Image (cartoon, rainbow, N blue to C red; front, top):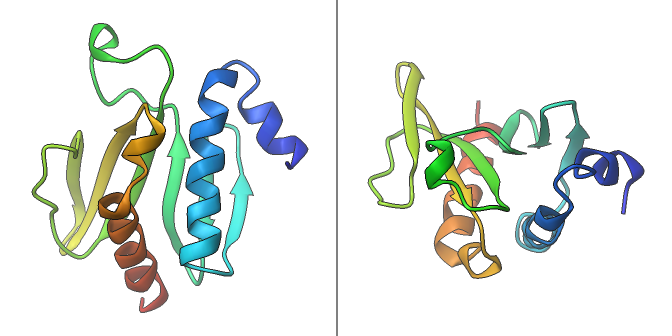
Length: 125
């Protein structure tokens, strides 16, 4: 495990297993990606960033579980799912989606399908 990633999770250590599972699935299912750890997010990119992990507040504090990560991904269309906490269209036909993940089983085939689609979209820009 990269020291920068461990430092990123220093104050949210209980969320580290969620991140580790997510990163492992990306490496297994998408392949070679660049991972950049920044102060507020960890970015996954190929040609461009296609997904990020953060602790962004996408729900009211009282509605947030004690431990979670937020997966952010970009797609050319809006996803219609109750799992999407926030969706915005910062540019025409470029939708940013935020998904709060608080359990390992939420890092499932549906989420990874969206991440794969986001990776293909980023690679094609």
